[in-house]
View 1 (cartoon, rainbow, N blue to C red):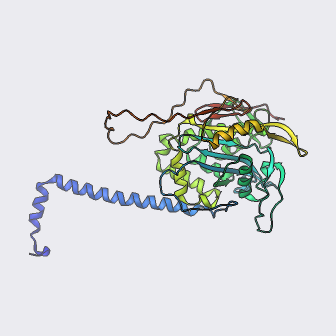
View 2: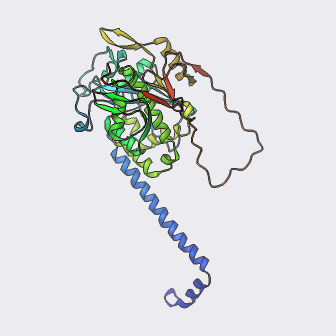
View 3: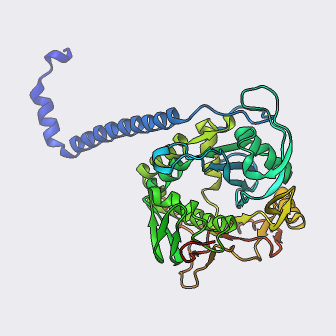
Length: 416
């Protein structure tokens, strides 16, 4: 008997006599549809993020291997992140400047065991040797010079910032990114705002920007202005702005690593899109596998082991310019520790723009995501973790960990 002539009533009676089987079949069909839909949505999200990635920039001396597989990247990683205050991306909102300067220059180092992350901030007024870099039109090189580090973007773009920092630190930096204001707007919006502590009110008449004392949650333009503010906080110097930026980034790290952010696919998608769509990346970083592998390498680092450091400096005049110059002895200790993959311990203050929030509760590291079943109990003693040598930095090196909650120290209107 073929399928067309089988008695339909018999099959109807069988389904009716076993309602659980029918329910399971319906559940299986729903799960199958949901699985296909989820995969499709994920694929569309990845495609949408990928298509927003701008063409990459070749770094000086860059050699590319195959992109990594999905999973934590092998070994230690150095990534340079710079931000330009030129007004690019939204001239109407932020205005247009004649200069094209890397007013924010930071280097992220991830240890080889992926247990520690160090972020070094280079003050924009740090007077250093600027590398001789190829002109962006390919017609010759800009000459080497001694100047403030924030002119490196002018004299050779993102590759010149990387080369200058490599020469200064002795580190190899294979990955780099450059962002404008819109990148900060997108990231702060994606996580639902970044909450910061303001010890005394900020009144900066240059930007202009005002922020009342107390806890403030910053999104969009307010987040950008908070990172730009200088004359309304601390001693009115760029060094105060650096410590203020470290406060913001510490709060951002804590917000990103909460279950409310990492456990929310929409927020993760928006965060990825904000990064990919608002940054110029080195071509070594444009592959999504590479981005993901670096993100996976840092996801389990504790807040205590995320350290923000200001490049050691002192006020001085060099080559006829007023700015800050390296404290070479302290810088040598810092970068030798990084090269040797040793942990670092801060002994200096958080910086002239911030202070420790003595009333803040202790920051707890987020608990790992619970699995569906408890892990079996083992009778074998765990292998002790290797002892990591800790290098205490001189007190001329300022900074904070992501676990430390700090407050911005504002100053009266007008600054200096």
